Image (cartoon, rainbow, N blue to C red; front, side, top):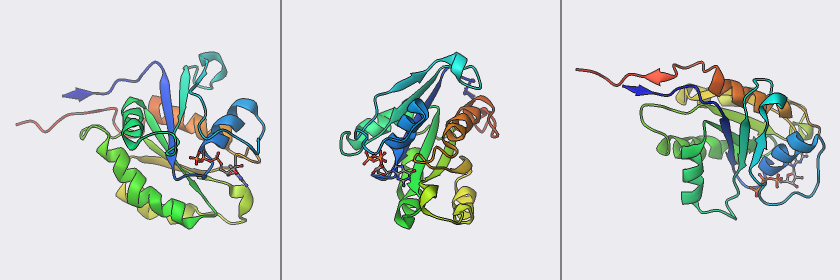
Length: 185
Ligand code: GTP
């Protein structure tokens, strides 16, 4: 029997193709303003319990493939409780890579009997005037670990805190069972 208990801290990791806005989302959350120039990778951030809606200390981890090896990224996935896969709503190829690369990669680095929750994050909605949410149903159906999809903008701060809140909630109030029982004879 494998138990995944509710953790006392929440560790959130942001993955996705280069330039989709991972670092910008983290820095917009923390500073409450958009900076045009951000470093390639944000330092790991700890948000104290008393300023999170769920009152749980939360670590946020950025990933940058030009600064990290894929093995280091895999190790970060293993340590995380919830995975945010970010794509850019104005670049269809970044959403294609969510299904063709990132979701399988996350699965490969999670235990077979416990799939960590995944939030799909469509960033840069300030650049388009339509919703891309209809494009993700097939993905969500194929990958039930997808807890939800959220459209946001690091630039206008739209849904940025909601995105991190939803990631917290996916860990603390999972939709899927928090433990799985291996098939027993
Ligand atoms: P890597 O470090 O290559 O992995 O990129 P990243 O995913 O961390 O993206 P980053 O935050 O560096 O942003 C890439 C570019 O997109 C920068 O020029 C940002 O200013 C821009 N950007 C990020 N978020 C938004 C957004 O919500 N709207 C718009 N219009 N631009 C954004």
